[in-house]
Length: 490
Image 1: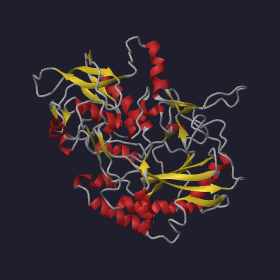
Image 2 (image 1 turned 90 degrees about the vertical axis):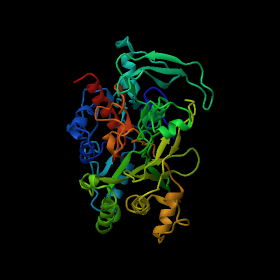
Image 3 (image 1 turned 120 degrees about the vertical axis):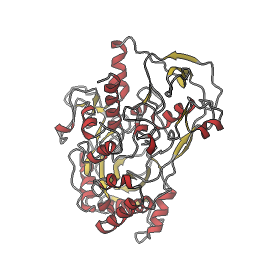
Image 4 (image 1 turned 45 degrees about the horizontal axis):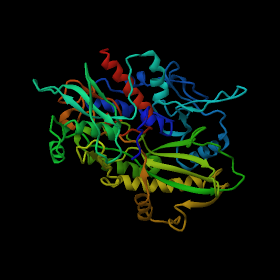
């Protein structure tokens, strides 16, 4: 699973798509037992964007923050994006145009916003469409402003050092680190930096449980198996892994189809998006039957939370784009995935050597049948979009999955076999150090402090206990800004 092992983390390598989840999804964090975690409080901290283009809702954004968000300039794909949005709206019942998928209501078809600094289209020598990452938004400007900020590149934190236990809570006194070793290699000499107040763990949904388990925080059965002394008995660490699984449909298009001149360097890879709810995928009758079955299968405590906004919450994302390969046909297509899958995986250490990667088991498509049924029908719907005007006038042939492999009269089983036999990870992992009451399987409380410790906080996507109908970066920025306020004692 790809991770951003670079300054800025995954914000330096991701697709730059900028969206937010639904208001209900953010409010559910509070209803799950985390006072102060709701849409209003996160929204307060997530407004750190500027440079928005046309059609965005001004009230959904800030203009004095550090992260730049906008549309690429010049917007060369305007025609094809319009065709993608028009066809999606024609093919999907009641799908409206959405002027701003970062407003707390992502349902609809829209142009993506991106975390970029757009080009100055009016300048004589325009430059820009530059990635706006946490590195160039937060870190680089601070290097000269904050003499107490020291960053060691090509080094890796390996474990926490603990004070001798004198209370029921463990207190970290230092962090051990090494020069970054080659994968699977023996680590070099260890160094220690002392902790004055607290340690902030921000290694992401894969890296944070890895670091905590190396530090002796986790399930004693797993730690003892690899020879790690148990410091804090906390079985929730490394459980509850949630990532999404991606499939595609791809078409060859005519040479006269409108161009989309985006590359990974000068702009967005996926200029159009449709966030679709369960009724729009399955129809009202089947959606309500599936929703009822799902609600009845979960613990009573979660029923009201799941039911709140259940039928208006987007469950599938279609990210659509045109590309021009170096060789061969021009292509158009969509990548799509279940936004809130029911499967749950794990990530756990398999060695006490920090250079040995944790064992990752996402458990894709294992669990509730609704995930496979929903994805199979979403694939049908994707084909319908590209068979709808004005897109169908440009389509020459379906390349993936292809009509030979999956004919138009294919059964549910054929569609489901396709989605479960050829998918990849979306790389939106969350949940492995979940923010929940400890009795409900939590690893951190609403103050982000790891249970059983007095001064170790986790600040990244691993604290989200449930998936959201959004790309993660804007939410993680909100989590980080809220954490800063907590650390300052406000």
